[in-house]
Image: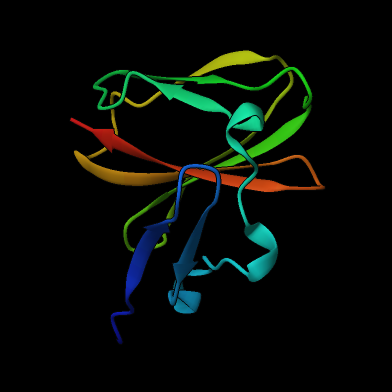
Length: 116
C-alpha cells in the first residue's frame, strides 16, 4: 500500500485552496475547488474542539453537502446541511486534523478542523 502526500496551502487572505494526492483513498481536489472570498466563507467552531463541531453557513447558500476527511483522505462524515447553523457530534472521532469540505453545487470550500 502506497502512502500519498496531503497538504493544505493558504494564499493571501481572500484565496485558499487545498491540493491532495490521495486518490487511492477517494479524496481529491481540482482547480475548480478554489475557495470563495472571506465574506462568503462558512465558519466552524470551536476550533480546536472536543465534542461538537458547529458549522455556520453564509446566508447565500443552503442545502449544502458536507464531507469531513481525516489527514489520510478517508471520509469520516457525509451529510447535507439544510439550515444556516448546524452541529456535528465529533466526540467519538480520534484526535487529529480533519478537513471539512462544503459544496453547494456551484462552489466548494474547505477548512481545517482540529479534534482534541
